[in-house]
Image (cartoon, rainbow over all chains, first blue to last red; front, top):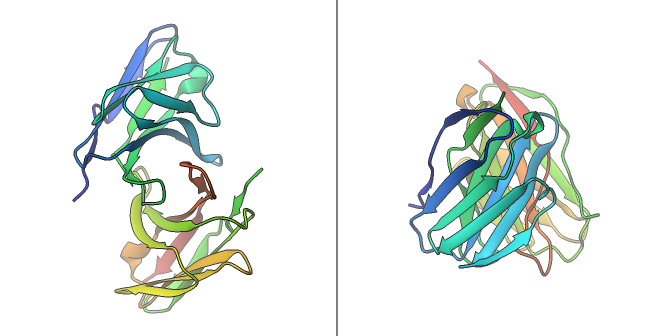
Length: 112
Length: 111
């Protein structure tokens, strides 16, 4: 069974802080993804990575960066948190490009 | 802009009935199609995936794909109140690692 683990279920931070969200998968998957999900807007892709140290921007990368130093770990970084980054953040991983993505439990992030 | 469209619902069906959820997509070259179930406050959970035209069955779930008409559907037989959730359709357009997600259809199964 695929296991994608996100470091926190709930997180509260203050504006201007640097925030790190961590994601680890145990299936040796090539691809990893970060999404945010907001009511009425659906899932929006922030960044994805198809290999170690490789990353590509998704649809809404502004204000975010990512790091993938090891195959199993993909980190999302909010460089200077703002209130409009309050959201549910979801990490996912998949094997080859056309295989299903499997999601972690999500991190509900509040920026005050 | 590649798009995936779903009716937001809610779709209400009585317990024991068949629920039919539909999804259309714009990229004719799309290769892979996925259905996820998402309970309120939880993350999406994969239910089905389909790559070829026709039907694919797994227990009470059937995915149907028609590439010529650019739609994919999910049928849930013998619907249960526990099936009440939002169902997300996702499409993998040709030549990309990315999925395009629909905004989901909310299903309510009435006991």
